[in-house]
View (cartoon, rainbow, N blue to C red):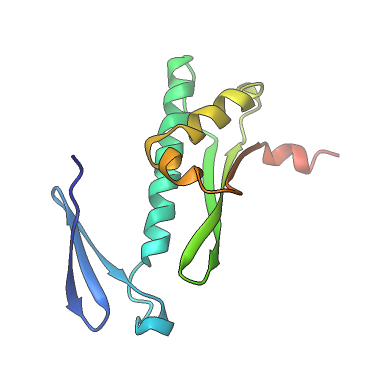
Length: 136
């Protein structure tokens, strides 16, 4: 079972550890933070993006393709103290990887972190090819 420990470090700055890794976590300035470390919401989106990147990379690796040219962006809306409407954008710059959009969407939606978060209404996944936006 995953285990993360978080303890106060100093004025609204916290120290988090998991396995042999550690990092500081700050809170928004409106809550007494000071832009000294990532916010909890940013760490959550990092986890979501990393999970998506893992599943997309494994998918292409299993097809005998490398995972170069893949980028993941995660955004969401903040309403009061709640994050909602998560959007995961999978960017693929390699034209050889076209035609896999539906499989990629399913993989990202069913990833461990994503599946936990995507069940909120309004969450979505899209796959884009940045070079095609400029090619018209």
